[in-house]
Length: 381
Image (tube, rainbow, N blue to C red):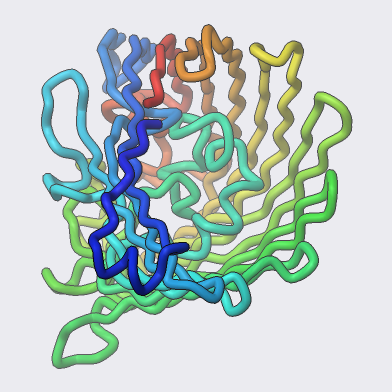
């Protein structure tokens, strides 16, 4: 990362010689070759930007106000390195845009476009939210542990470290005459003690993307459009020597899905969907073979509870296996190889939920199986 130090003006030198301001320019550029064995019945080879980390650049800064208090900000842009387009629906700072105050004693309060508590606390216990990225996500990233959406108009609080325990929450305003229309709130907590990490979180969104000014607004930048979206879960990571193992459970519940329903261009089930629930169970592990090289693996089982007016209750299920190897050529540049395979079983619903879909693939498979393999390079600055 490159640091740019602000020049103190004369009044600051006189009034507060100890105060210091810093602004940091940083970023990630990641690109790789993807192979998907079945996208609508066809094999696909393509260059894709991002995945383990989305390509980005950003600015973050702080000003020491004295007494353990700092003014802070962060502006972070997402982009596609293959065509130069902005990510997150074309927003200039679509990944993050916030400012606030941070206190060593009382915690941090920020306002703007930010991550919710599921991302801040729970996601780190999953493979995709920690070291593996998008293709290891649970089906459709239904629990948002890989940041399918950020939240706008958000007031966030994060506590200081209290002997290993931390907690926080967000509230996102609808900015609408109907106070609850497209608002969001979330809570999360974690406890870290040596090798042990325990985390849990809850999120609720009312009518996400129902208004252009609310909490969740960008087309293609949400996981489900529904009357109400609820996500909760918990996870544990434990590190012993070079190995880290983790288990996580998440639960996503969406009621009254809209006709535009699923992630991106994926078509929702036919008929009126009164509710859709995903139960996600994950086991993951990472082993640091050398300081520069690690391997990781993940297995996730997902059960879906689909309730429609045409077919009643049905229960497809998903099994996903992921493998990854990553080698650091330097402190800032690494290369990796990863793959994810998904199989869909259980009830046949006659809907898109019967088709396999590894997150990151262009579209669903024409069968109940799909494999995606990726080789990529990543550079941080």
